[in-house]
Amino acid sequence: MWRSIIIATIVTVILILTPLVKGMRFDLETGATKCITEDIKINAMTVGKYSIVKPVEGFPLSAEDRITVRVTSPLGNNYHYADRKDSGSFAFTAGEAGDYMACFWAAKQSPDKSLSIDFEWKSGLAAKDWSKVAKKGQVEMMELELKKLYDSVIMVHEEMFNLRAREEMMQHLMRSTNAKMATFSFFSLIICLSVAALQLWHLKAFFQRKKLI
Image (cartoon, rainbow, N blue to C red; front, top):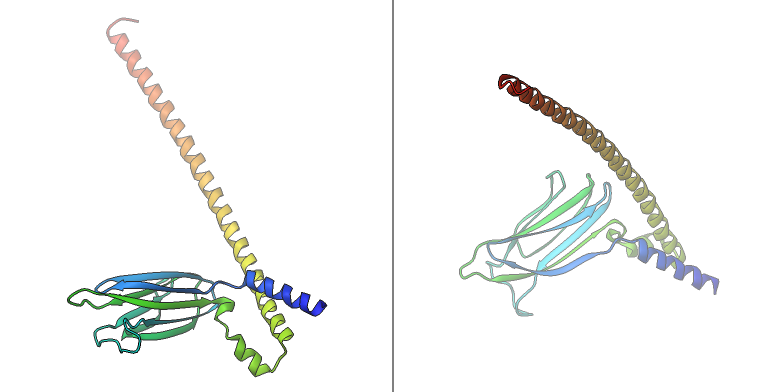
């Protein structure tokens, strides 16, 4: 009984903590480009695969139905490039943290047509092949779930540090912004007082010339 409760708890925690798999099917017009982004943490594993859906099952795609795929990092570094392919895959460890972009482009055709593309993008724990881990180690189900839970805890721990770093960065930005606003307000007040004094001096000089005062 306790074994079942523990396993159920572990599975629930893993389902909560494990990043979702980004799987989708989208249409791409020939001559057009479509990009998809994924937020990936530094040193995280990510894998993806893509393929053009056959319009008629059992019949091959035409030679013109091909796509060009490029995956770039937040700083613009290329992690994957495939030219005129009907399917492919990529896998890499993120060297930078931020939004990675996968762009799909289909060559212009006459007449224009739409290609349906299946795309699956996994990152973090979802990118690991747990079946191979279990097979290689010949571990029991409980040990495998504990391994998943341990990796989940490590990911949450790293995420907490990332959030703390972001919070410190935001606090620094807020302090810097407040200091700049205070400086701006001070100089604005000085300028307003100077303009008011200049107007009073001008009016006084004008009335003196007119011998009104």
